[in-house]
Image (cartoon, rainbow, N blue to C red; front, top):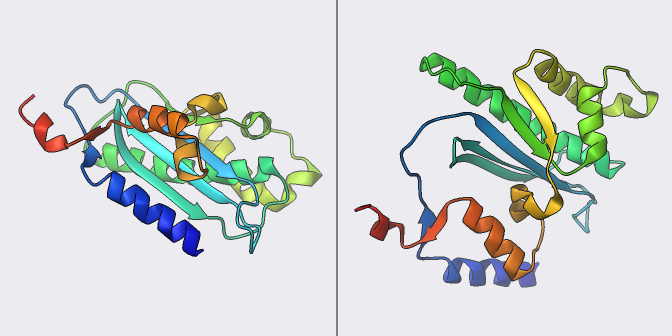
Length: 191
């Protein structure tokens, strides 16, 4: 744990002059990237779920937290992450509705696990998925109503990997730049 804390402190020291840049522009749609690391905690074997949500091109919400139960498969861990992203998207859609902002297209959740995408679209119940049935019904209901689409994204482009895994510096920098994180955001105010 001490090694992990030192790594976090080194990261914070190296990123002190970075910030989130949110340029003006059209709203477009809500897009979510979800990911999970299966059994990533060496002590409890619980997975970590993460999501990054964009309104248009701007990152507006993100989360990374340990799942409350142990997942018995990587598909289950990933699907729980999709469910967490779906819950946040639902809340944001309700908020936008209260503000009388209508989106032009359905929200999209990107996931890098084919089994999770299959579960989101397959209306047949399977005995092996009974333990995650509430999450399955929740996401399927949103997909069936047309509010949400669940699509595949290759792992190399999975933005939520930033919140669940240690990545090589090149991949970390590539994904970080897609979040509109930039050096010294105060210098961009005049633009």
